Image 1 (cartoon, one colour):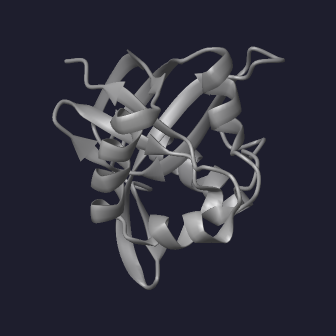
Image 2 (tube, rainbow, N blue to C red):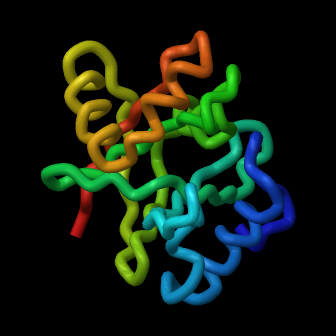
Length: 148
């Protein structure tokens, strides 16, 4: 995506970050300021379920044993981010982690698999616990295998 339509809940800053991340081939835009510190992000590119257009969203980087864990927190909002809704419709995506880019298929986790991934995610980014406490929804968690 080139930044013309931000994802649900993401500010123009997130759309600009996605555009910068992609246009610089991962050399810029791969971190996001959270509580005054730079937090690494990966860039998800996926198809919109209604238009089929490619959309992109930066998400906090959580790597775990050959996969990325994707957390649809939206800062604790009571709605899921658009990328979650779109991945539920079509789980295929392109993932960029700085200079590494690959196609993969995400899987939404549930039960003990979700709890294990959630534990890794909150260890990596403790604010996820705060985000979960702000909302009545269970924050969705996906796993995206690393494909070399």
